[in-house]
View 1 (tube, rainbow, N blue to C red):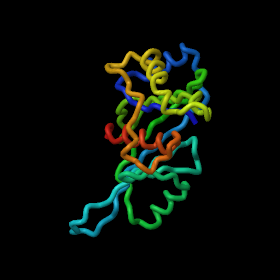
View 2: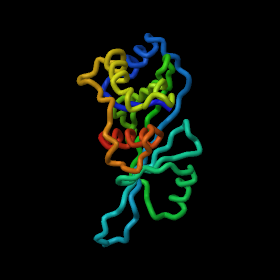
View 3: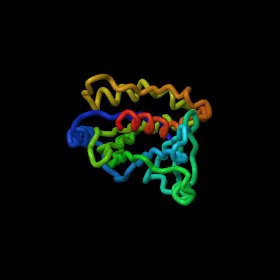
View 4: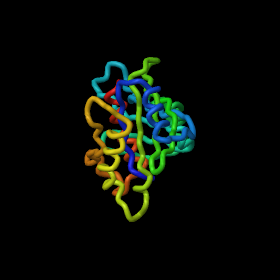
Length: 195
């Protein structure tokens, strides 16, 4: 797995896909990414503040889901969804969905598509992965400058330069190597700003 940068912008999807295809990007698949907010059920009249967490589901990982709660991110089996439904201890409050198309372009994988919240398109999601950072010799975190140049120089123009480095210090349990947990952190933070 290479280093990923995930962002959204207010623009037109056809323009972005034309840029990707003009650069030589080849569409290889489609899918969805779902981010649901769950709230703890508390007794009526209680002064307790319900705990909450986000649950991420990726079509590309049909057996896994990712749970983000406060300063913890964990990868769990997809059975987590049915357990939540059966125990009835948490209720799903809202879901944001990205309907993505995946493109391959040299050392880059680009996922792009509309972000839908309550049937309304809230922006265009772009995930750019630099796969050459996945070699053991290269630290994925050292690839942010190259990723920034690729995104801002080829996929823009954007109103402001896209930030490609992220502060993961809020989640001290994350592994040192970039992983799906880091990607989930980026998605949850993005979806929080959209709702």
